[in-house]
Length: 244
Image (tube, rainbow, N blue to C red):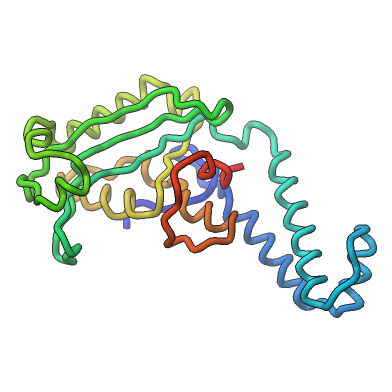
């Protein structure tokens, strides 16, 4: 896999973690709480002026929630320099066949990017271009139905190397990675680790540096809200909460 998924604050070349670190700290603290006796739990809860009544499991939950809130509050007070200026939200569409056959080679047929200002939470710009597939140039009926992209659209589109070059130029014009810090963001790991990775091999071009690290919002959401990361999440304002 060429790309490396991250929930962390990185510019294209940075390697700092963003959400994994805080949740690792919380997990370590939870382990510490699990090893405490009931009297130790009550003593610590008294120290923090928290409720001390209840069975041991209830006391553990109260203390864990307290420590978790403290950790997240510390994270919120990190200096503004640790925050991205922009998030580039990417959601590829790719060729597909009904039944998701393992031998089928997926090719990107749409490259969309939404530029989100993290301070205002406003969408400042978008990039969107269709891509002409080369290995399987004819779209299946299933693919057309699923994506809404027609054969006529991809027939008129540029091939992937040109579209990728256009993306890089679009980012350059918006001074991403120079004047402004940013990170790519996807719903899951497939967009970068599978679709983009495979497409670059098909097109025989270098995997783009801006996509070597990204925020997996599905994982961040699952960590924050303690839900299954394989579940489908509703669209709306909630996705960004996991970055806060």
